[in-house]
Length: 296
Image (cartoon, rainbow, N blue to C red; front, side, top):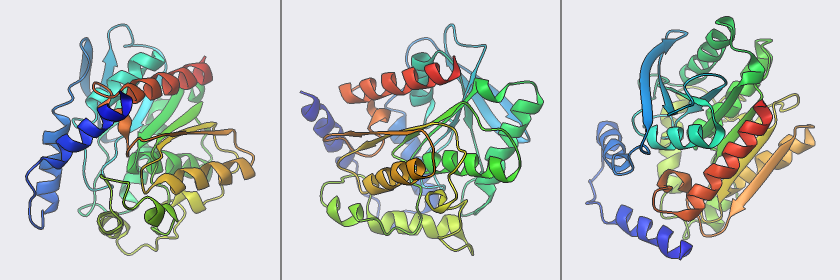
């Protein structure tokens, strides 16, 4: 049944009318429309805020409007996405972890190329701890580019002599903008969601003049020693599979407590489809348990 569920999602996504040579504005609008089909769970609450000069939105479920903070960075190739597109996923993770979700509307490329997103992530984190939130009461999470940004934040915190958060949960993280991992070929025909050509274009928009080997742009290549514990979830059908696997291996080699789960038959950020896909709900439950245990 689970495989039928994800195949139904793929069929729905494929049924959308194609747009020839879509602009960034078209792609942003398309993502907003698609994610609108997966609204937040019943009982979800939101509150707009500005933290460290960066627009954010608190997103939580009834009963989780105080205490530790789940600092979330949305995916979208650093050029798409917003606090709107990931409201359902963040509130579901909020419920699973028992924490307040704080979704960050970091600046997007191409208007704001690297390192704008990293600067925004650091600014929000710094503002939280300066306002009295203990690092041990902060968990970082993100999907796709947001997963890469979450990892880049941890690396940047070392550079700024700021303490690490309690942990980081990474969903299908895009952590290497060289676009050179083997799974771009081995999963090319299996992945219905991400193409090498499309993600290469996103990388160009985000990098601007920076080389793809820049550590905070491709944090897989950074010195990972001293980072907070990591939990990585990735689908077996996605071209970003090896980004996740390589990250787990490099983090462990650097002495980091890094766990990874590879989900059979699942596509990129399958958790976003949790209302329809059982594995999405299971993954969110496991991620939430990990976060709750690390911040206990």
